[in-house]
Amino acid sequence: MTWDWNFAIEVFPEIAGAIWLVIGITLGAYIVSLVFGLALTFARRSSFKPLALATYGFIEFVRSTPPLVQLFFVFFALPSIGISFDKYTAGILTLGIHYSTYLSEVYRSGIEAVPKGQWEAAKAMNFSKMQTWFKVILPQALPPVIPMMGNYLLVLFKETPILMAIGVGEFLQEAQLIGAANFKYLEPITIVGLLFLLLSYPSALLINKLEKRSKRGFRSTKKAVKEMNEFEELKG
Image 1 (tube, rainbow, N blue to C red):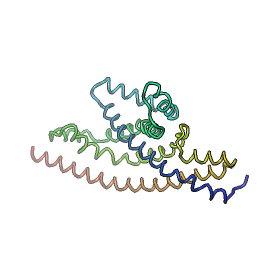
Image 2 (image 1 turned 180 degrees about the horizontal axis):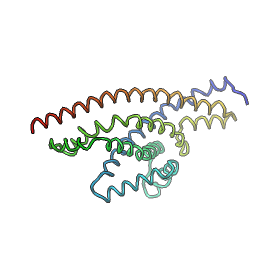
Image 3 (image 1 turned 30 degrees about the vertical axis):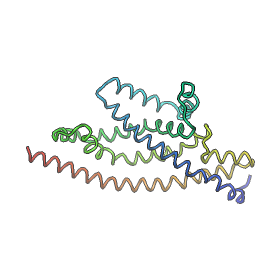
Image 4 (image 1 turned 120 degrees about the vertical axis):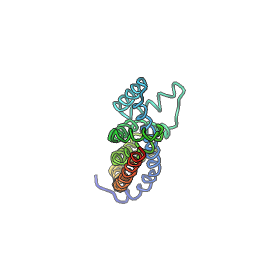
């Protein structure tokens, strides 16, 4: 089989037309994973032991089962008990919840890296739990883990082809349909690979840029916290 440039040029716009759908699903699922992952982190750190244990069990269960099985469960099994989603919502929720369990571990590693003295300083200044988390802990915990969070965004993006299993018309499904209709798979599948490369590489560069910027912000945050501690000592 030889490469057919005319066929490749002909089918490229049809395959590339799914780009906005793939990007939309990726961003939607990533937002779900960021928010739900942080909620899982808080729940796992809860002083209420049953909640912490249940959260740990949920995280381990989700991480230990394939996302394709979870996708089938959400889209095909849940409707039998009266819970149904359209294919796009099912895809976004499945990928988002699956990767939230990984991001919760990323959050946890960042939080545990914050010195214990920062918690004590916030307590000394009579900060509420909400103020402690969002003014002291998270601004220090998140910048160091941004590269890991960015990597999971890229991994999630490359996981979107599994949604073809429930009929979502992303890159791979379009390529498969074109290949089946024309009995030519080389060009469509190669185009899919190139599109993933063209979208992933700039994203990796952007993540590196954000990492450098976050390091500058992290230094500013540490300086502000240090000044806060010095101010508290002077008051004492």
